[in-house]
Image 1 (tube, chains in turn brown, yellow):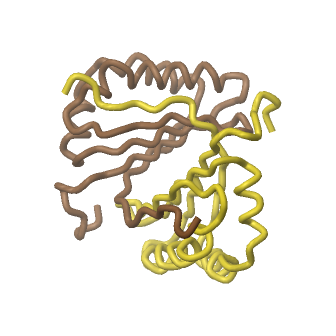
Image 2 (cartoon, chains in turn yellow, brown):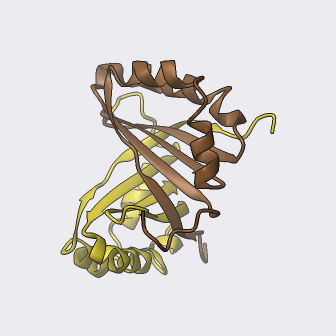
Image 3 (cartoon, chains in turn green, orange):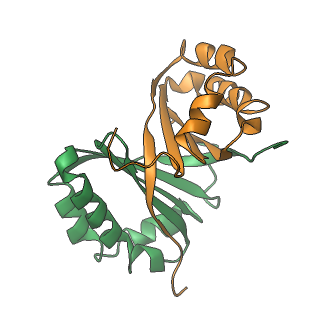
Length: 109
Length: 109
């Protein structure tokens, strides 16, 4: 991990799942069930948005957490695991943790 | 494109750039300059957030647009091109267009 990264700042997770288009809706349902009722009740959870790609081949969860520690504490909760394990039978998964550099809003419109 | 996709709904672009960590900050600067002053003045631009991965290997721009048409109209603007062209000399790029399935907010905390 980058040494400049501070543990008490907001982190964003952009988790990209690759899937056969015939399974995209099933994957969406599994990730929604993994999030609803456990992840969204966890301490430090700020927001998450679930996306399906127009080409059918990706499902991406974008989430913000108050800190890395809060995210890691949630990972100890077994509640979402059955849904995630089933998701990984139909998809591959590239998780990635980010810091937010900058946010842009509309200007002059 | 998925036939069920409606042209007048919000679209999200999650564009993942892969980069050598020594060039990550330069890539962040180029993408910020590509966005600032042209993309963020375009009709239909709603928001964008620029992220750098903690492991140093990715830079990801998350953006929401009011419609595909608005996004495509912005793509005709030559303003951002020099920055994007320079970015592609140091990074590879996987763009992807999504629709938003669902947004999760904190519950019961």
